Image (cartoon, rainbow, N blue to C red; front, side, top):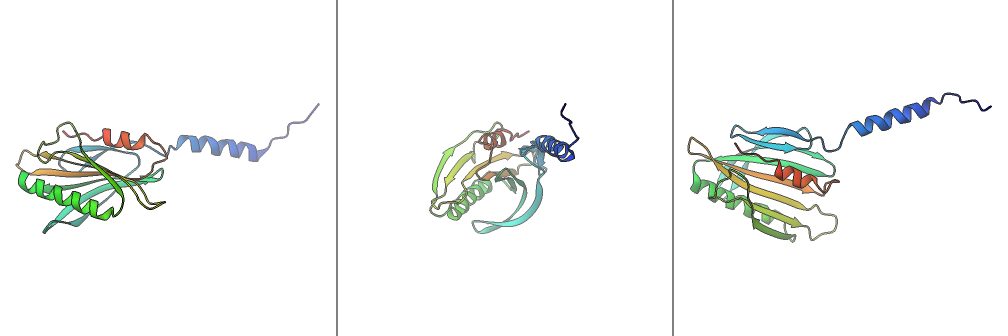
Length: 179
């Protein structure tokens, strides 16, 4: 009769496999963005930062929340404009600056929809496929929402890279909720 001696390495390997299965690459969570009310669905715990961003002739304070997982960076940027005219100018400058950074990439821009977003400036979606082999694709959604105090909250939601799950960008963009 064969003897079955315990094999500690086998138990350790099985335990490691179970732990790996319990820690998903995309651990989706709701994250409030700024004080304007947007709630984003991010696939990992976000880091937060703010910086001045040149938008046209102005330097605008932008708050950001984002994280990297599964081969891509998921980020939301937020700025607050004084009113609709400034919001339109800033959003156009933001789009232009982004397009300029993409260089030779094949860029497609199209109108987008997001429940409760303003009609002016209207939501816009950008998809960019890099011209250079190995460069990261980019997906961006710009949108705005009027606030009760007359200001306009501007947002840029971005997926940079090719996530290991093809559903991740869809989940990210569909997970954006304005109050």
